[in-house]
Image 1 (cartoon, rainbow, N blue to C red):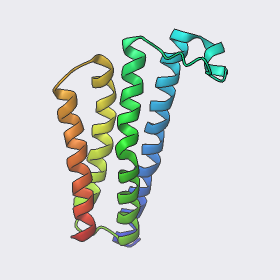
Image 2: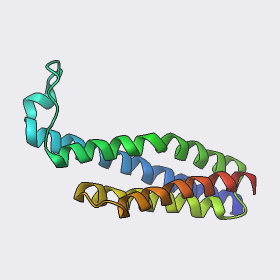
Image 3: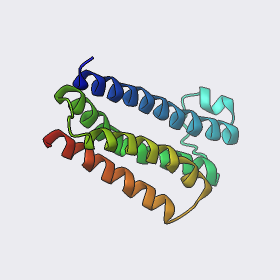
Length: 137
C-alpha cells in the first residue's frame, strides 16, 4: 500500500468518526430537548415555537451549532488532504487534533466550564489551519 493511500484511508476513517460525532451532537440535543418537552413535542411539527429552557438542553443546542459552524471546513479540508495526499503529516495531525478537540469540547460545554472550553475550541481552529497548511506543504 502506498503512503498516499494509507494516508487517505486514515483520513477517511477520521471522516467516518466525525460523522459519528455529528450524530452524537444531534442525538444529545434531541434527547435533552425531549426529556424536557416530551416525546409528543419531538414527534410533532413544533409549530408553537416552544424551545427547551433547561441549561443542559441549551448548552447541547449551542455546542451542536458550534460544531456545525466548523464541520464543513473540516470535511472540505479532509477530502482535500485525501485527494492531494498529505505527505508532510501536518494535515494528518491537524485532522486528528480537530476530532479529539471536538470530542473534548462536548463535556466541557455541557458542564459549563469556561475558558478551558474556549481553549479547546481554539485548538480545533488551529487544527483546521494545520490541515490547510498540509494542503500546501
